[in-house]
Image (cartoon, rainbow, N blue to C red; front, top):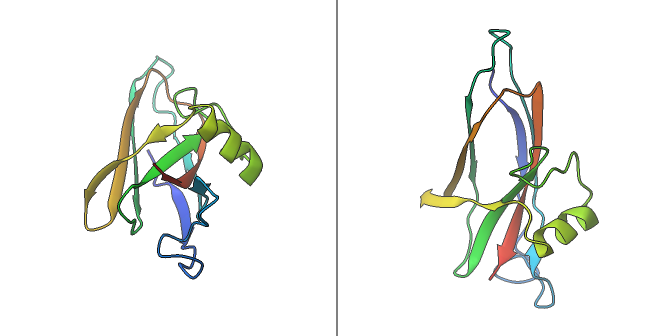
Length: 125
């Protein structure tokens, strides 16, 4: 597996302490990535995909990951509106808080796709 390409630009927390207006349930911070897989065998191979992001949250906020795999919602390069709809529909996965602002999600794929596209979102409970 080659390393994923990830660029994180944090949303400024200017509007409120959480960076989310009181009317919003979720906020997309610009963390969009692509993970590419190098095929090592023609046989089906299970793959462990680990996603990590460092983002400071406030009490009651969670980081959700959406992406192109079925488990992540089956969305390839979703727009902000599509991402909000997917989260409201229960798609994507809530990431696990590790420590020091680090969030992680680990999944096992039955076969390696050529690539996975994904996006992180900040969701208020």
